[in-house]
Length: 208
Image 1 (cartoon, rainbow, N blue to C red):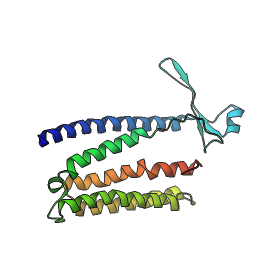
Image 2: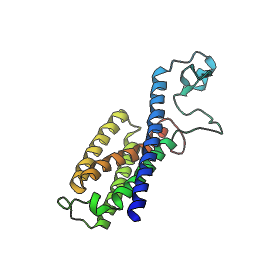
Image 3: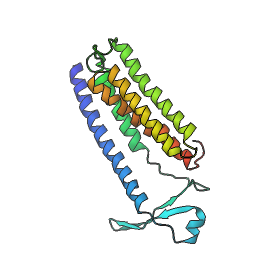
Image 4: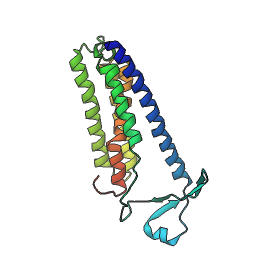
């Protein structure tokens, strides 16, 4: 019975993870297109409001006119749609899948005794600490260096080094597939949590 439940949980979580990832990547591609297609605003009123780009588009018989503010506008509307659930849902479903597939069967899929002869409970604690520590390190990098001169380049270089360290540690601590999943999940955690906060801080949004 336990094996039956785990198989179904694995299947359902895998499909949820794939579908939410498609939504996340799709919305990301849309904003990549939007940013690359923006033109400087022609309306003087938009310029005074701090608009840095605009786009006129048509889809499904409707006309759309999105505009982009270079920094946070003086006053935000009461209803602000924030594209974060696509990313959050992808990470949450992925972590749930990781829990069902790897943490629950740590002795089989998480531990490689030729690398580290851990007890299952120890391996689980180390795997969870792996995410938390690298999340905190990424957030610290963004907060310390993100607002400095050439901050983007500095943060990018330090995050590259951080991912390399995470990959090296994972490959020396965990079994094969889990070793590759660890840095990937940690990187997604960076983007979902402190990464979003760093981008909002850079655009002057209060509270981040």
